Image (tube, rainbow, N blue to C red; front, side, top):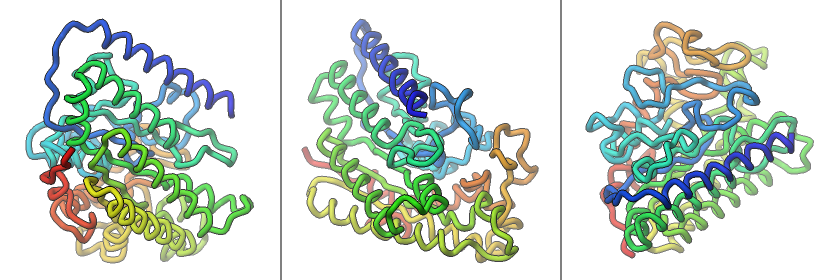
Amino acid sequence: MQAAESIEMVIGKWFLIFLMFTLRYSSSVVTPPDAAMFVLGDSSVDCGENNPLNGFLHQNLSRFPCNGSDTTLLPQLLGNLSLSSSHVELFIVVSFSENENAAKKMGFPYSTPFYSQNGSIKGIIDGLNFGSAEATILYRYSGSLSYQSLNQQLRQAFETIQLLELQLGEETANNFIRSSIFYLSFGKDDLTDFFYNKSLGHSSEEFTDILVHQMRNAITSLYASNVRKVICAGVLPLGCAPHVLRNITRKQGCLQELNEVVLYYNKRLEESIVAIDAELVDARLVFCDVYQPVMDFINNPNKYGIEDVRNACCGGVSGCTSTEMACREASTHVWWDLYNPTPAINSLLAHSAWSLSSICRPFSLKHLLLSSSSP
């Protein structure tokens, strides 16, 4: 397991060296856009092409197209809010996969998966998606492999910022990074693993506090690299996800014990973000609570035209490995695969997050996009 993890880290390192070499010998002069979206996270933002060993090692993955097409089943949280034909028209479509829908709403171009780049500066300044399915905040401690963990993705993001400074010049690159959005969506796999492996020596409160501390470190590290606009997504009600419900005997309701762990994590993460935002006066930090609205969809399905709140539209025991496995009417389901919502649910979340401060706090994503971060 450690060897497989090391292989991924080595491949990532050499890929960055390749990018640096390619950009250094590029003679074209590029003017970056005002801003872009950079995405870090787990399967909530990964579209299935962001791991060099994806086809050999990964299990329980969802296969989502990475081209941002509105005709795909890509469950990006904010993807359906496009103001222009490219991803959000500036912000909401690229990040929420939560990823694609966010960028569309904000007018940003589609965020290219990190390992799908062609080595051009244009591929970077349009935004990148570092997210990888099954990525965790901590390195995996159970019997699973660690895929592009939070620290690995942060390293890729920091080295990307360095490449931008090399190619664009420090002042131009810093202005671009300050105006861009960094979207973080982690925690799902850490909390699920912990819940089913409680012999790790921590209470649920202690473990979630460790996760929140790591997320806090990630945000402050991004700030030190001139990132000023950050969105942190909370975790969905995992106790209601198909992967969990298939392992319990009762036919009604969710696994409340797991949902309580998720609620505590979300609460502590939001409190931490509020505290950091108060400390870093020129930062613009937003916490997006996707737990409560998804529970509303589950508890009041008729209100939203939902017919199935328990079963995945796509995927059996091993997950959604092909879109051919998908049901005919994804819009009637809450869940696309074993853990992630359908495009219809993501669209509803995206519209609310864009304009309402009740979901994304302390202000909506629209307000975040229009705000400025003074140098």
